Length: 129
Image (cartoon, rainbow, N blue to C red; front, side, top):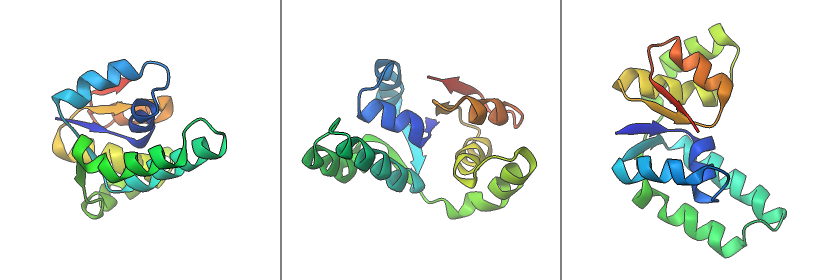
């Protein structure tokens, strides 16, 4: 099972460029943090305002998210995530996904280049899509 962050999850759900690559991993099984629900919902709201996604579709995506990926609580990841965020000057949001991947020895699936580079410093296999 791979850890998928909000950037890759949003790319997949809204069928952005290269979304098909992510679909293969989703079918194999992915886990994400409960934080991703909020971040994905926020991205969907922005896309709704730009008329890229209709409001009903956005609501359905969020409602069914737990059927697409396994949702994991973020609390246990905070100690390591705070260390990562401080040391590498990245957001706690990105650091939480790195911490989950590191703590579970799972690869990280992301569309965020800086996050991918940072995660490698923690021995995390990173798939940049």
